[in-house]
Amino acid sequence: MDIVLEKSVCNKAETFRLVFFIGNLSHAGGTERVLTVIANGLSDRGYPVSIISLWGDGKPFFSLNKKIPVYWVKKNRCGKGIPGNLCYLIQTLKLDSPDFLIDVDIILGCYSFLLKCRFPNLHWISWEHFSYYHHFQKNRVLRKIMRRMTGRYADWLIVLTEEDKNCYQKNLSLHCGISRIYNPVPYESAFSKKKEFSVILAAGRLTESKGFDLLIRSWKLLEKSYPMWQILVVGEGENERKLKKIIQKEKLKRFRLAGITDNIENYYEKAAFFVLPSRSEGFGMVLIEAMHYALPVISYNCKTGPKEIIAHGRSGFLIEPENIKAFADKMALLMKNRTLRREMGENAKKSVEKFNKEKILDEWEALLKLIMAGEKENV
Image (tube, rainbow, N blue to C red; front, top):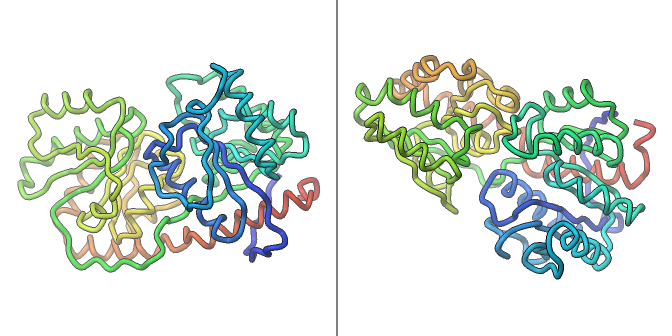
């Protein structure tokens, strides 16, 4: 099932109560960032919104509207393990009485399926942030099971790209509705780039899928030839020690892991261009953020996301996956040509207007109203 989501204006008399359910709202990743943007936006439009975080230290990493309560399961549950989690979730839904339960990661459906059985009038939406092709290191079998259960029992599935939507429609027998809703640019004010430094920026969790080891190998081909330039990688993750060892082994002097930040905008403002060496992506939130700041981008043409964001040769470059030399060549091209950087950067800034936050919120509203109207069968 598929729909075309058209612009919708929120009617205060038609608002619905929404509960978003996420793994860990204390994390600083793209998933947590975009949830915060959507939750804040719907709350500002008059929707009663709350968030359940399965784990976390009791403090969201990104700023939340003060009207949005957050329920921290592991921190506040009475029992232990899965039974304790489920008991707390049931109590929370009784208290909140939502119309919608929205998973922010399809694997959370192992709880939502049971909650849907307990509250049959609850509308269950699964909002998947991983690519269909993503190679998971753990819980791989459980995720496969949850994809099928979600497709069978959820009311709706939201994915982030057209490529992912086609994969789900092709590979699973879906009984639920499915929509592609892009992640939004989280910024509202326009940006005009007046100054740049000789900095190549990258950002993301330091994991295998993000491919920063590939970026190190590309930079090794360039560092001696471009002594005025450096690479900064913003983020943290389980591969930090491994990456530091590789940097040290290769004797690289200007490849720096900058750690985590709550003000990545400062880096976007100063960088000359942005690189995404990922082996896989769900969408590529950092791409549209960087492009909003008039940065040209270089990305591997991985599954999924970059090809639906970058216009090759116009706003950035799409490189054959894991082609270290080709990636380095495009980095060299942008380092040598300031005029090209600024031209592509301006094109990038204009191109991400299609990810405007208000437009994406309109699509969310349209979908919520469609489901509440019970029109799924007629799509």
